[in-house]
Image (cartoon, rainbow, N blue to C red; front, side, top):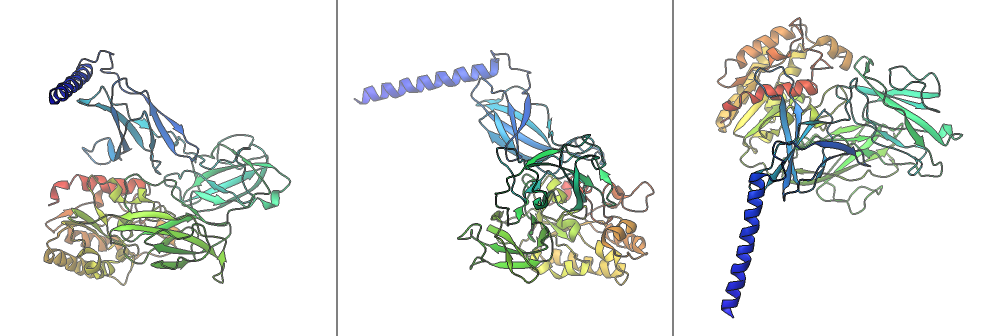
Length: 541
């Protein structure tokens, strides 16, 4: 009996060895002539507005690596053309790719049991970004899935857009694209849209069963960024209940990015409602879509803000967090129901290689309307190494220093990227020496806790654009203050000099191409910050 079993096992081993040998020979000799033939990948849009990358399936047993890239700015000498954002794998010949709010590129590489099979695909550009830019619609309301009388109209965000203009029409426009309102079929338009979605109120148009809508991006001075999107049909079912809960804005989440420890929550608001309450939980609510607060919520905040809420407390503890938002009237009464519940994870922060410490430039956000939860506006997204975001919006150098013990010491990063003092530049009551004293104290605290302090020089600002965006004046001596502070920083053992890269052509103020509001670098500015820091990775211990 034992002899029969041993013979059978030996036979199976022989068969397995033959199969492996055949696979090895096929992969190495390429009898089907796949050698040197790169995969050809293309896109299809799914029903929920996401993108699916597809390609021809290889005849060999294999798996595929899908890499997501962003193009670099081209402003840093010696940098590569692409920056890797994230990597995924699949055994299928299709992959749902992340849809971030910047142009992204995808490459597929096949792998067999014994290594790479043939050539990777050429980088495939995300097709939703056109030139000139046009917002691309996410929500569709055809005859088979009509809209309610108050539908959410949602589109992919346009990089550098401060706000959007939406136009409603009774018929298709006379001409697609362009920047002018339609000469025929125009019903109304609004420029009061500060996120990539809007709840329309169609109740005044009950004589229609179908309308059309389109959207275009606007800049700081309400100037057109690109053209109108293609007019989208809007079929209406007047008997359908209108949404009465805010819509979570997770349509353009960046792949692989991590929420800062001071979270920011964002949504698409209800029409005409400006008061909202956000609640945070450590487990999902018992009732999804209810109207009553969760009894075990750990935090809540009421904001008079149409689309986002900044958490005033750090959330450094590892684990799962859940949040949702409901609309309130001016007296604090609930309007409708809670949004769906969103989920994010704070990972374990043990043996942290690097952390980012500073004000809103570190925290994230930009282009006036985008909060730090829009992670395409975080320079950490573009680093070649992981770094925990310890930034907090609104900090001066003094308030950054004040929270060192609370936010930095428990994390105990090996390296601390420090960028604070820009808000102090704007304030005439704060001197350069005040900022330097704060930076010196941060340095001393780092050394006491065996943390390497790596200072980033302050970047120039643009007082005129700051005035227009935030209606605040800037200390006329800001440049002299910046020079004095940066001289101190450049005398430190470890520093990275950002300043020279961010001037305009006159070399006097922050380049508007890198920052719309004159203070916070936008997407290209944050990419540039990451690229400069990446060149100094050898300074990390």
